[in-house]
Image (cartoon, rainbow, N blue to C red; front, side, top):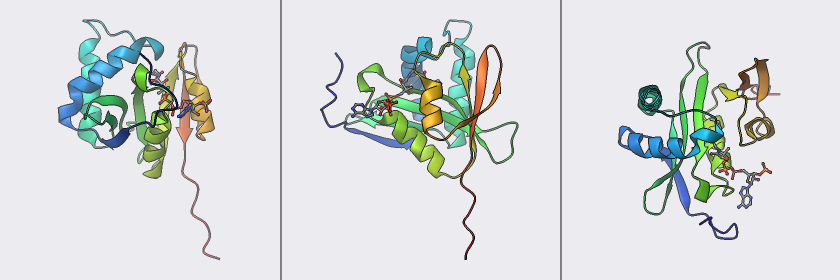
Length: 161
Ligand SMILES: CC(C)(COP(=O)(O)OP(=O)(O)OC[C@H]1O[C@@H](n2cnc3c(N)ncnc32)[C@H](O)[C@@H]1OP(=O)(O)O)[C@@H](O)C(=O)NCCC(=O)NCCS
């Protein structure tokens, strides 16, 4: 059953740890078809590797409910192509917790870290991801048939006078 939108969302964010691997995988499996990615016996190992790498990087976040259950995640790690940038690999929120501001909170915390953030949206994403990222200030940097790349840069420091 969906949570009522009027109910105060009782979640908090923390850095993802190695203990979160299987809980993150469960949420990724729940939202995978919307990303869209296929999680099968063949692709499971690659997804698990991404989760392990992102959790180990210290850049990833989980949203947890009052009972410490993982209800959302942002899997991020240093970008392999742009020095100093962070790559947001996957972000997802469990369906019962949608429209509680968790995506906004997760991305807000990542942006607050101040490093450029890059991400890829697959063609066929079912969650208005392009719109949500654009609202957050991401700009499209490349587009192919299968995906589009986005980047967010921190504002340049203000001149001291
Ligand atoms: C995309 C996704 C992460 C968004 O998560 P979310 O936590 O529901 O997002 P938010 O709650 O922060 O914001 C979504 C909308 O809900 C609205 N909202 C936020 N809090 C709300 C509240 N308390 N009541 C009503 N609406 C609310 C936001 O304003 C936003 O609407 P808008 O875009 O019209 O402004 C989620 O839909 C998802 O997991 N999708 C599948 C995975 C996916 O596609 N990931 C991206 C590719 S990796």
